[in-house]
Image 1 (cartoon, rainbow, N blue to C red):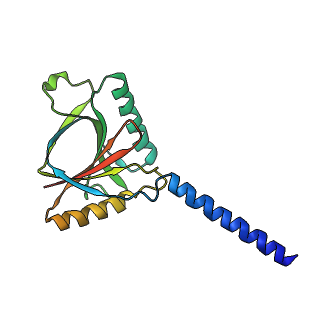
Image 2 (image 1 turned 45 degrees about the horizontal axis):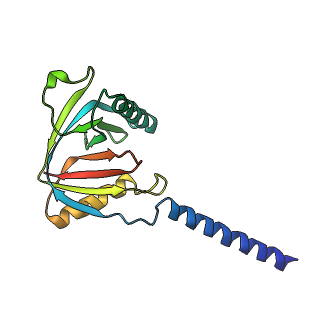
Image 3 (image 1 turned 60 degrees about the horizontal axis):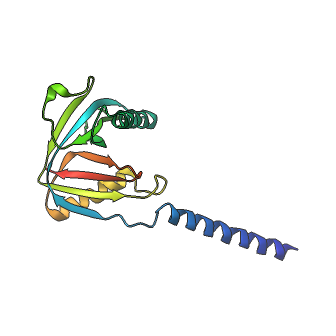
Length: 179
């Protein structure tokens, strides 16, 4: 009787391992994280700036509001989250700008009410395309670390800003720009 319980327990454990492995695989957990080094460019982001205590629900709400503005046509471009590395606001706070990336602003007067714009420029971009589900994708700290390592390998210093560009298929890319 005891032997049968051990066999059943072993079968259950093996089944759980297979289920966990296949779920991790399905969510993209084994997809490699590759950094692409690209030529620089200019980017203008039209949106809103926030400095506040970090709260995922605020972050998510800001992204949804901006996505709704893009979907309604109020903003044109790609949903973009820009995070500024700001040591003066405290470790539990975040400084970010959420909006839509566009090629250029031709007439500042034509900005939608309540929105501002920021312009960025670089000679070199470090970019990762992330297709994994949020449960298995690299954490922001892991992305920071691998980007810093790649920048050191390339002999450049990164700007204190990062970009997350959200695509329609629920994937995203993360960019760090060289100074």
